[in-house]
Image (cartoon, rainbow, N blue to C red; front, side, top):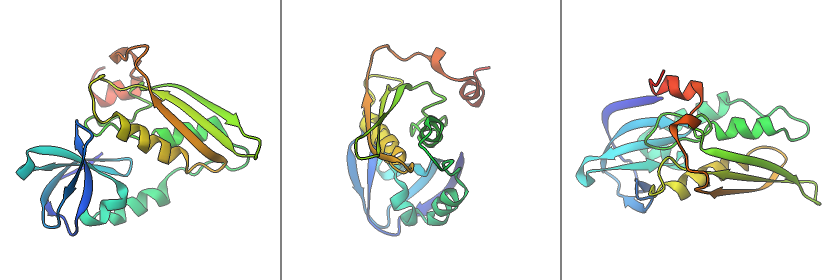
Length: 187
């Protein structure tokens, strides 16, 4: 996780996702922001004039002056193993998805309840994921699920992906992996 306490002025208008409501809001060119979290190709920024947090997607990293970080992450990311689709390749991609308020990926947070690969007649694969959130009222659910879906679709051999947010069973901190607990200082 990288953070930068320096004020950055947006170089162009962007659409950002308000945290925790999940609503999209236009942040105009010239808006001062501070990056509080940079993980998985997305940025969490505080906008003092709005007294709020926002998620900025990788596609808008250039407006933060961070396009080089996104490209470096793509160049250094673990590439899928090649050959037939492997479940491990999908888990690798899911580990690049983060809740914008928690510096632990959604896999290590225990948010993924199931992952199924379903071969399709056309030779491609449908990947179905059931996930939850740490709190039922979190408005970021659709954004996090969409991020997971986008990243799954980058895996060679995946032709379709469906990510559903479910609430049963309820999430608890017991689901956090040992790595996630260490990162959160829970050990």
